[in-house]
Length: 72
Image (cartoon, rainbow, N blue to C red; front, side, top):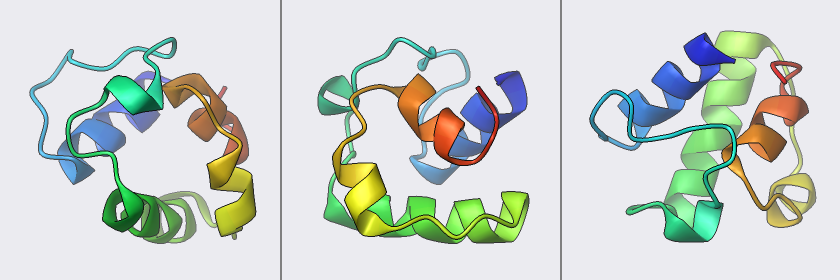
């Protein structure tokens, strides 16, 4: 989980430690449709997972995103 959070923080250009598994996506500065597309690329590139946009849409927290790539 820690490595996943670091990847997500880097992708979103956040400071280390800003995100936790329980952080609501709605509260993340920069989490928008473009960030979701970036997450799709991150999931594929770093974790070899094909994630659907519909799966991202139902996620509420960083931990939910982590679960999509098997990092919960």
